[in-house]
Image 1 (cartoon, one colour):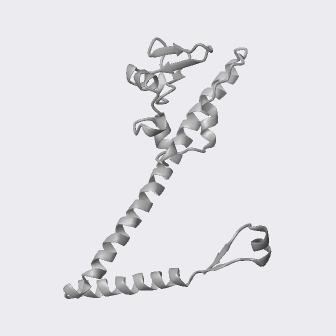
Image 2 (tube, helix red, strand yellow):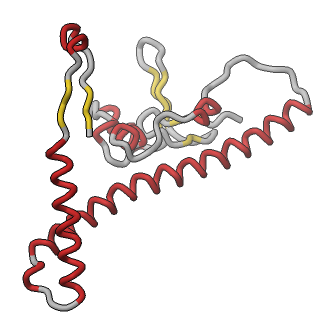
Length: 178
């Protein structure tokens, strides 16, 4: 039993399901449902449809490069049945799925951490703007945040770009110093 991938949205197509379109040059396109087939006929780009796997990969929503993806590739060379090989293959598939899940979770946490950090800095800036309106211990915290933000902005302003004379003649890289 072979599980195919949809050409448009990259979802699984099980035997007996989906639509297969064969072009005049004998290239076959498999679609999981009529929605994907219609978008293909209208010549829509899957990287621009937010619900496709291609969009998610192109916009950094999902992992692109990972060694576990090599196991999904098609292998057209048949091999003779060997019980030990099949047992090892099934065990390897389970291990690969486990690794993939762990890496997906790590990737999602890293994406969310950047968003949370951005939200916190915008909230801190808002607090600093209204620090003169606060009273009590919250005012002390706001003033501490203000000093912290000022020190960060000063360090960013102090960064200087130093160009190596040798690199500038070849037009290569630039180095930043803190």
